[in-house]
Image (cartoon, rainbow, N blue to C red; front, top):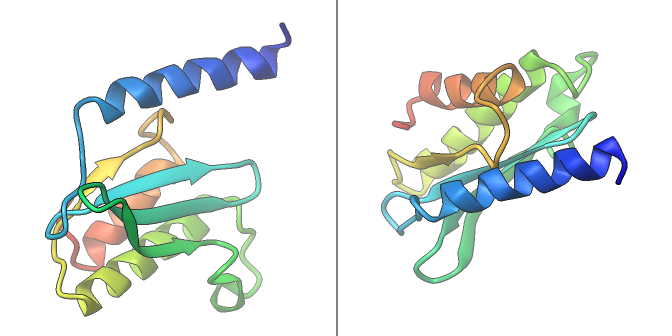
Length: 122
């Protein structure tokens, strides 16, 4: 088994362990994060009904990033601020953070900080 498959399997196991403990509701959705080498994605999910309330990624806000590389901390912080703005427009002020099995470090941490700074309680 190659190293990429081992890492993916480990991340999926961590994500499964996290998902046993947290769930999103309509008033407090789950912010599910996925990080690739080039982009970062986040969704606000209501697990009770199984629907996505809002989503954002470096792909969707690429025009506002201008010359910032989409795979760095600045871009992740901008995505966090964007998802917070979308949720606040829907009168949702708090959320549960689901790091998706990734370490709460670097771009994942900056996304959460960006959402907090924009007014979302995590």
